[in-house]
Image 1 (cartoon, rainbow, N blue to C red):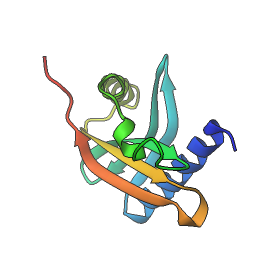
Image 2: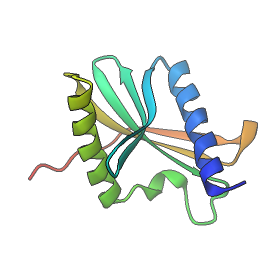
Image 3: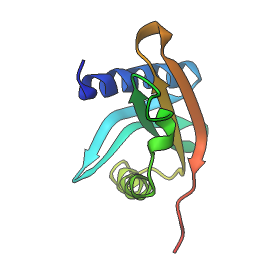
Length: 120
């Protein structure tokens, strides 16, 4: 299975998990220029931007630890464009979902409010 296939399956698994937790999925794989949001969902009064990291093994570490500072900055910019394009007035929360393994044995770790945008 290719890395892209693994990532796509992980995002489908993560979206299903969020729905079961009461999140309303707005969209998946949203793109604007070079920016991408894996999952945008509404949870209460929040717009949740969920970054999904999927790995077939933990050889290089837990998947949720691979959201770099550069990726966080891109997610913050993407969220601003998303809010603007969808005319939403919601507080934004950034979650990270790590999926380790494949199929029914996949282990999912959900880190709500994983990081805060840096204010300059």
